[in-house]
Length: 534
Image (cartoon, rainbow, N blue to C red; front, side, top):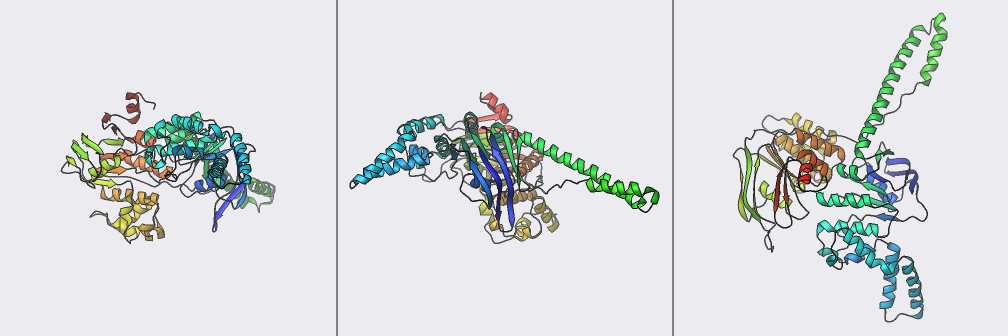
């Protein structure tokens, strides 16, 4: 069991959260959610012992071991894969390293060898003599072939690095496991593997994620960080959404009833307090007024932007034809993709999927005209107006200008400053924020500005590469609603299963063997057709 008592953290004048007392126990899996900036990662660091709270305590039950997922996938590039996994048991690894250094020292003294003997006892206590075998077994379970176990981490494909780090977190057989954004940089199929791994492992887990489908698949409880408080709800993310909405509605209804009662009582007191015959009744009603309480509804840290996309011109029939498309980066020894052929019809919503590093972003850049194909052609119809949101839009925000000026560059003839300000307001930029320099925006803020660019330019084709990156759930949900209502053609890349499943009506999957699967239908229908779990 992991518990907190009166936990508070404060930076400058405003607390992130305060007086948090909660228990994480019984092998439950808690999805830790909240708006960007609410303090989720800060709380996770406090729970993991990486950060001291302003006040309060964190207690891990005696005899229990904690494991944490390292988020830096490039922290061990020169180290052997097996060694990286074994470092998950810090005490064992430290004992083994110190012992090995003594044995490797040609000038070691008798005292050193006495220390080595002590360390041998520690290694045995931690079952260190079977450590490599156990680490190898975990890696194989994670889908990492034995041929890669002795390679340095730099030679492991990006899509497998997180699996190695998860194996590291599991190696010490932790009773409590902390996972901060474990789905980051994973493709859809790898996220499915992660879901199965987590569900099969018996431990109390605290998981931060913005992936709604993932939380629904793995969580037994939701820990909601809002109103500077942490509240636990049983069930998955959808259960939480229903319960929290109903709870707020109940409070609002009770408050409305109480306010009406207060109004009636106040009116009676006002009319009859000076009337001798009604004085006793008026006094009674004053006492009733004192007993009625209006429950405070604190302002939520959550905000939903209003996102709606329009198209200036409607397309009919096809939008784009790709014929024999091949791309190879200069100096590379192989093609990223070879001889791609497909036509996308007007109004289709096409998801480009496949493993990490397969070429999804490269294909999107070719479609956007950002890269020139090595061979083949991309033919857009005459009236196609293409809007492109790259995976990393930072290059769009390098100039020295404020938000209002930047957004004004994308207006049409009929758009005035009021339209620009309204667009910024819908995207949660208002007041003095519009004067902020675009260069200092966070990843999520840059993404919302790109949505605004698309809203103002009104393209009839939108290319969006990982448009949910860096976004909180409220923004992701608002974006999905906006794209569902968009009448134009959508081509997008996303690892968010809920997002893909809710939007796409056609799947184009790039596969490692160079083949392409082109399927018309939803993602669930695609999985069913492939004989895979939905």
